[in-house]
Image 1 (tube, rainbow, N blue to C red):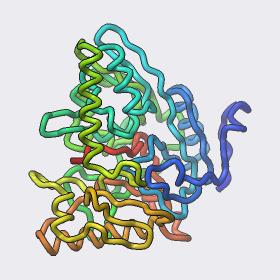
Image 2: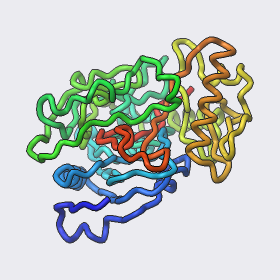
Image 3: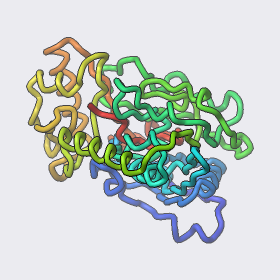
Length: 364
């Protein structure tokens, strides 16, 4: 794919061609992106997005690289790696750019004696993705990041143009079609005029946060910065609490192995991991992809696994759970890019949905 971005010459050396995406994901799976660029500030993020839109280029924002499965044939277009991570504190309010890692954000809040974000220390994602999906640590304790948001600066499309086509929306509750074992990234026709975009400061209510849901599932918008309203607390106590929660989570999950996080959502009042275990799927393998023996809701890349193998294993898991318990598991992860050769026109392969910086959003 050839295109011309209306950027200054300073960007020329920063834009890579045919960049393999596997090293940027927790799964270490994924083919090449036609073009790849890393942005270091929300200003750069906005600049690159608007340039891609003007050049009619499909684009996708990559955050921490968890909760995502990239196709073996890569992504046709521009992948924007969001490393915008500045943060500052004013009184009880903390403001941060959307590319900051949740662990770094939690550490920054602890250092400044601000309580609330310390529970997200073990979430390996970025702030943009966390806000997009209303990241949670322990939902039964109402530990959702949306509860802490005061306001955010977002890049939005004007009017009805930003509404995603109904067929492309990702439902926060509905089951997936049987033929789609992984949620595809919703897509929309690219807006081709930069004037169709504007910046806006929105409050928490604007997002309509829900369980694993925000308004950004249904509309095209890019989170640039987020402002939190927090509470003052003792830094040492916050640090101790954060480390204890980190220790608890690490004891339950296959830490140190190549996995993108929980593969399926927890059904109401149940554990997806327990359902998968009850169905006898622990240790089951397709190629290099294996259901974890430590936590059945994790699939591990034991070396050289392909996206196709992960999809086949997920389908096997879904069928086994359905047979055993009668429950249809919903995928927690998202798929991005091309999963079969010669299918570049599949609308799901061109996700111009910005802040899907797919991360790990709470697994229990």
